[in-house]
Image (cartoon, rainbow, N blue to C red; front, side, top):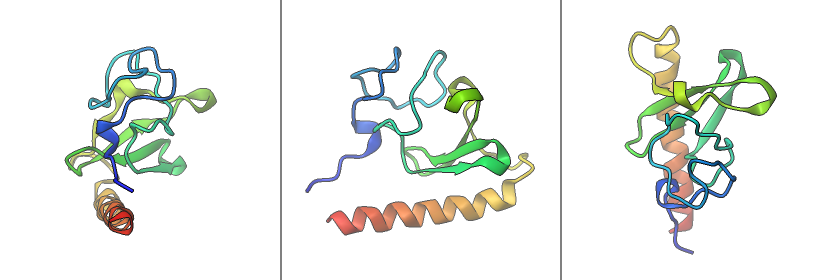
Length: 109
């Protein structure tokens, strides 16, 4: 079974911006992609921080703020930088998500 990276897949969650299109930008205005959209990379729900954390196509850690009713504020999604209050913990999470992605990818090969 060949593995297809999320950013090469087409949106399957009926988002009006991306439906049946690839999604390579995670902070587009009016994006309504579900956190389970096939275009979404490996994701960790971080309810204590009020967001979801995920790796972009370059392997950098991003956060997207949670909103009401299981929706996400994609317009405010951003890469976590050194000014974030949880930067130290985010570095550990980024490393672990990269390891998870590597293990999952290796198991398909």
